[in-house]
Length: 553
Image 1 (spheres, rainbow, N blue to C red):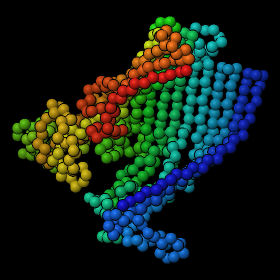
Image 2 (cartoon, one colour):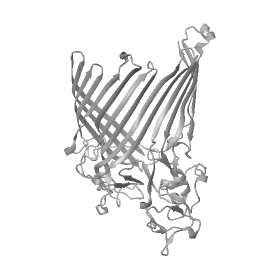
Image 3 (tube, rainbow, N blue to C red):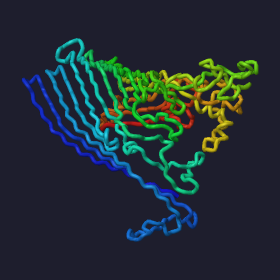
Image 4 (cartoon, one colour):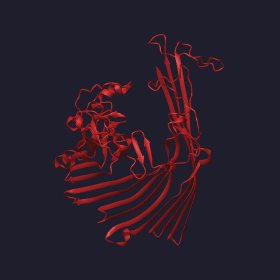
């Protein structure tokens, strides 16, 4: 039996001093000097008890006198283990802001901020995070121009990314992760509870600095046609700088790597928002439409110590390439006969020292060295969509209303891990873990069998491994997120005569998740995880239908 109790506490203290003054009513100034302090406490208590007198008595009787040597020790027959821990996070920020406005034409804002975090190492506890922005109104409403208003804004900011754990603040540390590789529940060595250096988590040294983001943006927005239409378009660049990453070190040290700063990821893109009242006849058809689009492209621009590549799990981070790309073998078919297998100097083509055989997949030898290994994997596809957006339409006509909300994501790929696991049943079911247990729905046909060739599932090269473009699919989709149809019964003369106090009697029917248009072979492209893998275990987003009435008396 186990029990858990946890709680969070937060204390905040803010103070500021404001000063405003104007010069000739055209020049307006505002200054704020202030301080923000935040203190968070995360704490948990976990207890696990076993070996009681029977399955029904689960009361843990303990010595409650704190003066006794046996204080809180069980005396009711249960064996109890307790784990308690706390995590403290304190952030202190000092800032000075200045705002200037000139004749309702120009707005300039500046912030100088100095942030200190308790979870950073003592020699890099503080970070300066300035921000600047300027907005110029090209056209104002009162000028009577063809456009109602038009303005352009440019901004730049450095934003600190706090680390909410004290794991890195203390430098090298010890952990209690010494256990058996195949049985993680045995958290001891030969029956003795021990602590070890963090070999599996990576070595945390000194000189760990603040990660931060530099964000630059240029925005143009305006409205026209008597505010019947408005738009906003933004060009942006975000750089996540000094990110922490586990870098490889010599194997003889025993650690999985060393956690250091130095990774930089750049995101560039365009945001576009359009809104228009296309038809606005008060006694006829009215139509409002809104469209939002975002195009984004990410790229890895730097790794620690000038490295150009870094292998992280089943991914390859390469400077100049997107961080969300897959690292895959290129599949070219199947070896149906022995004659099809390449041979040189009497030796067959090999995969990690194992000869290819009939029934194995054909993977392209990218570098022509007559062996298939990690050097033959290529970066293909992106897990994140290149273009996402929404399209909303609202129609109304004499009491009737129709609202449609469309949502789409385009230009991204996914690896169908569900198909890989289903075909690779030989290796999956032989693992000494929960992954080797058959699902209750294993007999169901939820994979498109026409897409995949029949390889030898017993092949030692693991023919149905996930890291090949055989399982790479287009995950783009268009969805009808919501549809609502309604009518105001108060528009009927018979209703008005009988119920004069009713201002509105709106009867409606709505549905969500009604339609998905996609070439993806899985159940739902929105069930793909953040890393671009589709496991098939996510709960589908079921259609929901609602009927109701709204009364305004």
